[in-house]
Length: 114
Length: 114
DNA sequence: GCCACGGATGAAGATTTCTTCAAGTCGTCA
DNA sequence: TGACGACTTGAAGAAATCTTCATCCGTGGC
Image: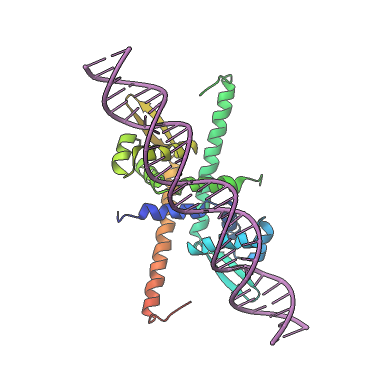
């Protein structure tokens, strides 16, 4: 292992670690979109969205191309969509597990714990 | 969409966004391990490792069980390993793309850009 | 009981990341 | 050319995360 590989991975995940950026990536799963549309669907000020788009651009997760008046964003590779799907799977599993645990605890009479 | 789903996803990725935590998860891919071993492989102070382990525990990515003298950690679900693999694929692709772009730029005579 | 060892926890200062605001660029239309 | 719309950028204060240090808990040996 060369060395700062864990660093790179951590940075990668951190760029995914923001609600607005996640939303953008999910919207882009269905195809390229102009900023204007992203802005319409995500409740955030234009400059803030722009900042987050800049982060995604820096890490090469998306590409931006100017088309006349507007700027269109797209996923740079379909793998990104796949990663999001994998994450969604884990997340739902973790959440349902939690839920199951919760109901189990309740079923067992709600004895206190911790 | 209920609402704070993007929030949850973002938090999930953020917990992956730390070199030590990534290393821990990767080490646990090969099976459960006592803290002592993790400590031997990751260069970090005990209390710091403990902090990061606490983060992973809170998000249910790992489980800890005491075995006599030591504490053993394990992935809470094999899906975590799968996610890491997916991430690794994307990451290597992004990096090789970058590399390809770079060599292409060099081959084209190193004309300045931007 | 007492002490040492393996870890966990709490708190505080240092860093990093977010949000927001003001100003700037680039294309279009008149 | 000038003005406007669509974004982007830079900077600064606010907020979250990291690292580290001191302290604490549980287990086993003496």
